[in-house]
Image (cartoon, rainbow, N blue to C red; front, side, top):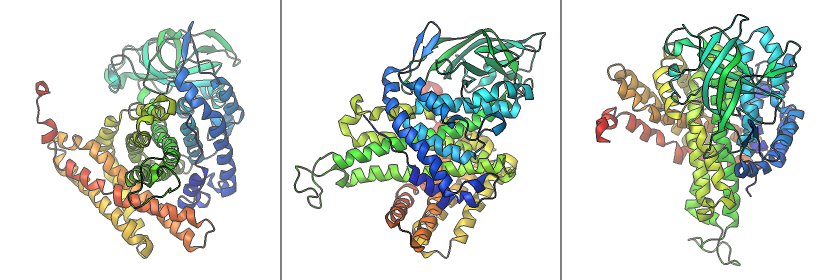
Length: 592
């Protein structure tokens, strides 16, 4: 059975050596000293490794079962969920007035990575609840907040988001679910939703569904969509639970992965719901949840890559196969361990350099969210809005690829369920699809985010890179290995943006045909920046006489690998982008 060890040491490095969280003037960050974050991460890591991780295989093999309208979760899930609740882990960054601990989002993200790496399917139950609670927090009335948030913060009640219907996924303007207004101010919601994660289960007393629907007589298309709170059980005036609402689980979807999470078909048969936010402004309210969810999904890509890598490293050190071409390294044994072979090292270095760079990128994004939400920093809000499709799309594409590489280290055993490696690949696959498929993320990045506010956010990113390179220019230890590669990659990104500006208006397909390459180009530049920042921090620690010399030297070597072997992909992506739309659109539909 695979194992999981929480990467607390590396999380501490990112938080304190790279991001310098305790020195930030963002409200709440002064409390994030190294001792405090270490205590939180160690406790969360222990829960992840000892409680959640052993249930990962259980959830995968048992799955969820629908019995008489109730979904039974896998053995051990409910007891573990109670343990997570009792520890207060479900509401780390929610407001204290609703039972949360009001810790910064960046710390919640660090904890979330460990929980997701240990057991992604399990962690989704609380993750979706957090997203639904955030939407109510921003768009709900005072009464709605008082009614739902305390119970959702504790996960005594869980939450969902209901968007997709059988005939519409990305194009939500095609939805048919309707909400009929009632005299008492409520609505009767009727329709069917599919792919609803945690739509029905046995781990909470109530489930609060946030449902997109159309009010009859409203505008056509996406402009006529509203968002509704539709609880599984009606909540009485005194906060107690009343009658069962007209919402039920029609079936559990049979999926490739995340078997431990109940992905449901949800039927709404005149269910009572209440408007959340304004009429016909449902997408505005839903995107409060969607943007948070997309950051969380990017985290899932990273987390599955991390756990798969940990097991691949252990196997590569243990499995004896062949001899090193430079001479026996295990002369007393029948063969050398796999890790002596350069191609295995290449695979493991691809994984390690991606994971550590991605972790820094993710936590930097979470820091920007804190600067925006806690500090009112509009520039940070614009920058993280730009980065959201990159975090979601790039980290999940690459994260999935890394689980495949980890599986490949095992050879044939990686394909056998007994070894457990296929679960990481299967679980990681969904992250590329849900919360906006990655192709849509790329289109959003190129078609909307680049030009947002006159392009000032992407220009701010270029300035950020340029300023870092300039400020670090006298650091000879960084110049050749980190600063020059970053500068070249940034120029590739600027050239790609210029190509879109020059060609996108007269031929939109020229831009959209290159959108996926641009998202990956952007992602590589972001990880290049993160590695340059990490290298600067590691070098400073070495120059300061750190007692943990091996850790920081390993960090530098891993960063050099990324800059030399992974970052040059930006040139390839630029070359593809500059071919325009002609190679992509050359065939007519009937020629496929």
